Length: 544
Ligand SMILES: Cc1cc2nc3c(=O)[nH]c(=O)nc-3n(C[C@H](O)[C@H](O)[C@H](O)COP(=O)(O)OP(=O)(O)OC[C@H]3O[C@@H](n4cnc5c(N)ncnc54)[C@H](O)[C@@H]3O)c2cc1C
Image (cartoon, rainbow, N blue to C red):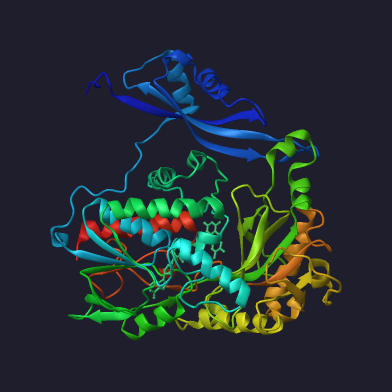
């Protein structure tokens, strides 16, 4: 079949290197040279990935950026040199980007109304995909729209009493609204680019489309969410803020006909259920009505904080190039050894702050956030171990019970006002309480506590081994400048709602579509957004 003259093909060239500070406009010429093209032969050029390589070479930091780029060429383009590059694998054809669309909306959805529960990434992107296909959507969230939610959080910091409905976990944007906004919990999914473009259309910096360490930052997320909301509203999505879903109104068995909410019944022909990893009350209510939940592995550990300078120096060195790179991050892994569990760092926030990631009074859990410029003098991350049902039990909510027990223990040890019990890393290793002032970015403050004794012994031992291991990569990591702050118990959700592989419907239901982290099918902003979008696509395809 001959190609139409205007048809274009995209080709990917991987692994181009530039020194830190070099002009990225050189990349097109560099890519052309790599694959035997002249720059004038290109119809287009696009950066698709940029990653920092900060590995040491003979003890010295050899800082450089590694790029993947796309070259656009007329479909009929031929040249011997390019053909050789193609055969050698130096350039490969790019399959077309996938859009979150279905060919035909299932007839059963005509003029139907779909409720989406949860305005986190999963719910927002499910609503977007449905609305784009002309489906009438109401997005229900127990929390507030982001402007009001921020004022409520200020109140929490003042009164030390969380609002159980609108807080750091609940409200517009979901759990990641006060986060680093990292977008690289990626799943290498062809839909991902289209979702990131949606964020760019709502005001995110286009570098998120290719930066391997892309993050948005809390300050920018707060400007993007209202724009995203307006774009959804333009497509007809209705928002019910401050409306808690308390249960289902069932018609025929396995068929939801309305939601029971704190503001009355909301009839719907289908439900996308994306309540996030902390909707413990909602899970219990749905379970009591016959929705199936099962326990799944989740992560448990502590937050650790260091001066950012200690991390940046270890990761980048002290050269002028390192200076230009700003705050460094890390991702550390300690494998299982000597009968001790594997542990790893997670959700690292360079230049960030520790936050109280809580929605219910009486429970303490920490997490991290940062602004777009990563400008604070602190670096924090979770240090976690993955636990499975063998550790806590096979009942669907046994993992939740363990989370609650430990969160209540840490809350009490902190004095019951969200002050966090904390221990310096070297004292944690030695099993001794820390003395003196415990400086931290955590707004509620830290007080000396035996974090080592508050944790289950197997977890403490795994974290001790991991700390000693990480100190070899980042000298000082396990020293007096490392501070273990509170408990990290909600890095991931402890339950899963089984769903049909093809239709994505919940077990035993014909019109209930669980999605995102609260349904146990995602972890992180990007993966939850993708999961929500895919559940919406499944609903559009399979109907109700
Ligand atoms: C402090 C913090 C920092 C984080 N940092 C990052 C990061 O940098 N990068 C990253 O990838 N991930 C990060 N995460 C994780 C990420 O936020 C979650 O993985 C993601 O938000 C999950 O999306 P979701 O849509 O499934 O659920 P959520 O975002 O949790 O949204 C669920 C929504 O459902 C609503 N809801 C719950 N119950 C009900 C009910 N009964 N009725 C009505 N509404 C209800 C809630 O109000 C909430 O808004 C962070 C999380 C926290 C807490």
